[in-house]
Image 1 (cartoon, rainbow, N blue to C red):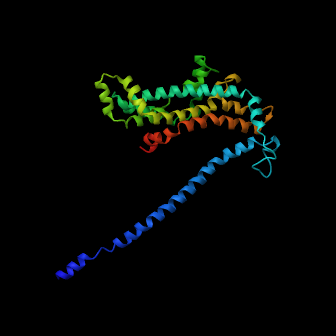
Image 2: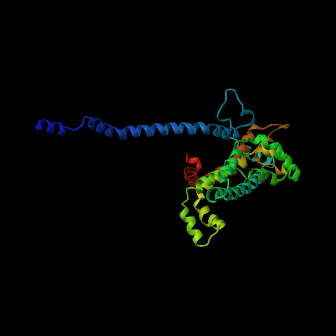
Image 3: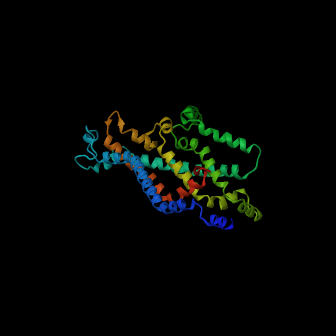
Length: 301
């Protein structure tokens, strides 16, 4: 009985054999999965790039060849002069300067307001903090179309109709930025704050000297989202602005389709030009974006 027991005990478990073979096959299967994933991601990226590629190619076509049957990617000639004509057809440089000013100042105000409110909800203890935060977040479910009329009446009462402050201030204080920065601030160790308090720092000093430098990735994410939101805003500027000299890019693009005709090739050229500042901004802050999204509330926390 002893020999039989030792013999049975010495035998390797049957499950070890398939486990080893599965381990041997794992590198190949991982490699195939990686290749398939790369192919699928490339196809999805190409699908999203198709409208942009079509816009760029249409901007280089002659006017009579923008819409042809059947559709063609390339025209009979490449007309780079469409970009120059689009720039001179309307005061497009003025539209870009207006949009840069509105988007830049609006982004700066949003960053400051969101950082201060996010710090208050993340670090300060006061009564009804949780309830106020939920109430603050509930404003995100209200569509912009619902509040544009009350907002216009407020701007009219203040005398801000057809002004830059009407374009900037109403949308500079949003719950999205507060939520995003609050989620990031909660990940910062409290020991840093306590050490600063021992050194005599107040809340403003802690926010500006400790929290803000650490939160550069989250601030970069919020800056990009806010800048693009201001840059692409159409409904509110359409309602509040009636002076061509103060129009932003979306309103300027709409002027290419007016009573004087529809210049689609110039519209595509102007739309291509209008993409340049946002692309530069995203490329400049690219190294912060992935990290910021992963560490803030947008990363699944």
